[in-house]
Image (tube, rainbow, N blue to C red; front, side):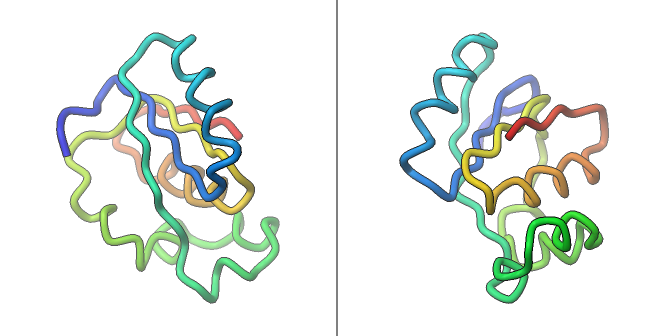
Length: 102
């Protein structure tokens, strides 16, 4: 996976929003890592306000890469509405202070 502490992760569920997120990340000046993560099927269909109230482990249960994260970013940019709950769940589980943008 490479070293990503001090990096920016872009979580996208919409390829159309990815270029704007990449431009924001470039302004920050940190290495950029594109991540294509999605929540479990049943959770994806819940409204965002419900997803935001779920425990992080439940949102990330089927996101296979989460258990292998050895390095965490300092900024996550959620490009697309369905990646915002994932970004906030990762923020809540992060071992240090992390920022999340939508």
